[in-house]
Length: 445
Image 1 (spheres, rainbow, N blue to C red):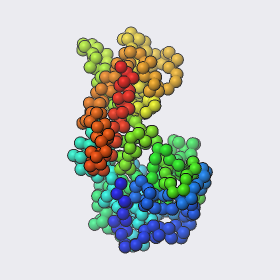
Image 2: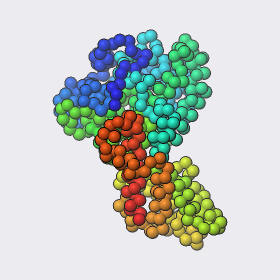
Image 3: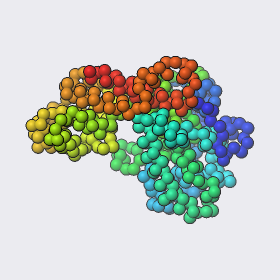
Image 4: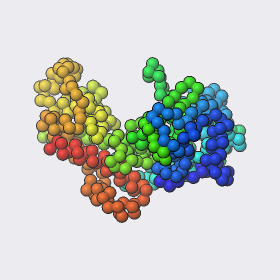
């Protein structure tokens, strides 16, 4: 990890951005416990937060008052963004926050300037969306990342041209178009992806849109680990970061960004947890790959037609879709119901399928209880195991390299050290996924 330097527009020669940030914290009432410090030393990436003294579980690490949070509501053009809310609606729901950031970054005086000085350099973000396309394809083929990035780039570009640009053109007093290029917009999207927080909805609000993202100073300094030791708690007037386990003196404080597989971490944050540390890692088997594997087993046109009929029925039951994937974790299948139903429907005898279809997929409601753990795979019916096996083999063919190639590089410290950071990160993503798929393969034989 390279150290995160002062962000572009804010490089106003502040000799010590941390000191500037800490005095800003005092001004805005953001209270840091005397037991923690913001540091570049001893952290996994750029800035992080480290304990000065040991901390107990449940101890308060810092408190962020709502007024210090930077959102579409608290920024200096909050009123305008609220009035124009209808025109700024988009698929992501991020446009108002992004406009707030675009404005605050170049405002002659911004309440958040000392906070911006701790941002990573916008031109040096590590997300795969900033890698050359050729490199992204070559290094991450088969992982699902290139497809996710292409989708993002398409929607970000269209959002920028159809919503953001017209809005900025309508308010030339607030936005300088010379500065606010698509390139800067892409960088801010990546920053929001990696550093923003979304307040969880209350139980009864589940039906509502998710809350808009917001930037939370101090909280966004914490790096992520699956095995984290701190957690953000929300209340009406402030947000509190609380230790979830004892943290010895001199250790880094880690938040969790959620249960993230390595492909999601690299896509959204530009880093991964090296094998075997990411206990939340997953591998995908595309749903259409299982259909493909089943088709390989058909011999006649009639069998093929019947297979498509079964597939269409699974679509109607909303168990599968053209875009979907079965998700396999280290310990269990996360899309257990979908995978079990798919194997069952594609493998059952034709007359049994007719009955099943007549009952609309209901009928024998003694669904195999217990979750589909990886250790249960050998107990599945032989026909199910065979279909699963064929699907895994097809999936493994989508990568540019095989497991052994990746394993050899990982096992050779000198060779690994010579790789670029991108090559190392991509290797970790591929390797973690292939290890899950190979483990599954062994259990289906």
